[in-house]
Image: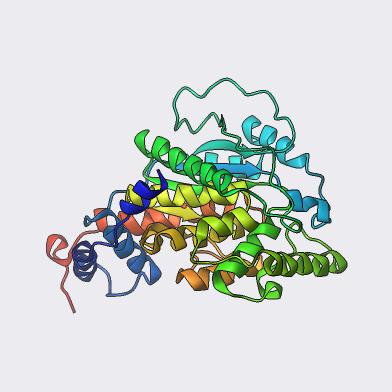
Length: 361
């Protein structure tokens, strides 16, 4: 599945991008007056191979959840049980991501790809896959949490591949159900440690620059966290030319699944709106599998985690908003969604100078 998905990913369509730029030049506004929105709409036209590109709707958030053996190293003050407890909160509609999803009219799919503790009971199934009113749960657990990356490889290659395949399948399922844009979400206590390790592995950044405070650890814990990342890199020496090997050595199951989601969206020429540091660390893996997958990526926001900026710079992506967020779940991506929709809607609905009878410069 991974090989066929990667083989289906193509570079942006230059003809469609040129048509979008030409259309922008004829719309009733000064050239370039919409700033980065203009280039965003051009990129999305290139992804779709059409001008104007399809409106990015309906939106579907996929929250991948997993736990991490490195939690045993004391890198987070939160107990691991919170991962499963927050899944219950997502399914009950009580988390921040649910509030933002309701505002945006987006559906929420929660995927257990590797939670360590028992989940709450599954709620009544949503009437449809993309029902924005009823969050749904998909159980696709590869194993109950990763191994401790500070001691051994977090996953086997087969386990990492299974998680990637899960992400691809979820992308296909959501797009087949009609989703016009996918949004990344994540949940996993301790997951910023593997994220920082992935970012350092793929970009070559120093662990001090790639590692943040996650849920807000104190100075001693932060220093220990950086040391754990540095030691893991030295122990495993991950090769960025082997993205599956990097994910297996130092990644998490949600990171691998998110990489699969991104690849699946790119193969279907569907935009994927990235959330924070977990998402962009997974995006680095996706880009290592298929460089053209970056064409499908839109950076929703700049996470307060420093590694996110390192990763975005490496991917060549500029975030749409910068609000100092570091919650995860898909919250930053959801807040950026109206910006993406607006950028595309301009090409669909704004009159040209000729059609509106407005004199040009």
